Length: 488
Image (cartoon, rainbow, N blue to C red; front, side):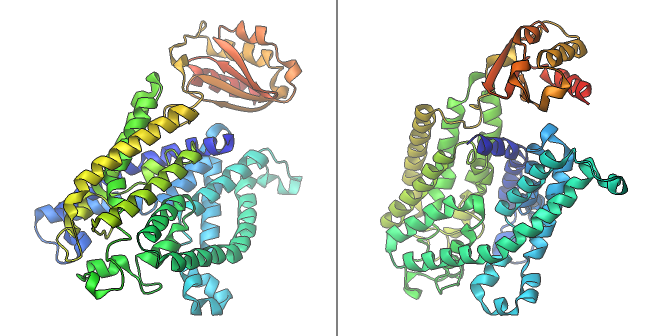
């Protein structure tokens, strides 16, 4: 669980880049419908619109790459950029070795299997990005101090990290070469099985769609229900101007349930997160989840919200996915029908409302109000009841921001702390959060808490046998920098 929470924190930086991009795209689509619906782009307004769409899409469409760098750097000791470089090397290797063109060169028979081809077409996804980030950061943490023989000394230390990450990535690619298409094929089979279950099937699909977002495997189900993998194509038939009379299912049923959840449910959940955040971190929570909620409402880009908490509180994410399933069943049964060509935000709702398959779009108001209330109540209850670490509630986010360091001679403070933990030989790793110096030590018996406190710090916490946290306050970064210098 702690590893997942660390991963969640590492994702905060790349996720923070996404909300403004989604908002830009939503505004751009409003100014330039042709960018979504097709047609000529003429006039100043549409030109500005297409400019904004492309600007926002530059990051949204390369979200996986943001995760590569964010996780690679964020999970590396000292947040060293070498971990990010190793992660990028891993990403390039995996996505190249598992690209459709290369895989079909190795195994030409795959080209004749539509499901397997589709699997490798979707290999450059956020899951692979996070995986590459984990590979890069793990290789950095384990091999950054590696000493090689003299004739290979140039590659010692940090220089060998990207090389080792590359070797690991080759092995991972071999495993994924066989595992990835199997997983994809299983999900397509599941899609086939639930396609004839009516409203319940639509709900199961919506639940699995959200649940699989972290892995990128939701693309398998999307291609079953939205496109023509098995002859359904809910999205393609909807935007082709057809109606339910032209197909064998209620057209739009596999898209409609996402609208109340993305437009109103996420803002409700965001409000719950903000209210549950610790007082000194409410502004941070507002900055992240409120902007993500606006992004979701306007154009249905949900990743800034989802990746902001899915690893911090995975149980809550399962509940979140379940709410999508429930609202999809309700939406289908009530007869609300709308479609999207990008995602289920207000922009797509506006454009799809004029299409022949759209039905009872006015229901978005009562459905939206219900989604807002339900998401808000469920999220607030779960967060408080189970003390979930959503944004603004992490263990290190306490009132220690008000702590004042008694001595502003940061070098002297660092020296005393180092003495108190048994010297640099006893320090395994150094990190810091907003207020604490976080140390991993080798011999816990060598730690002298009284000596550490004599540096003028607010306190010493021992969360584990080999962990020491020194409460310093908001000046912790200056102490940490001096501490790292002394340990070199």
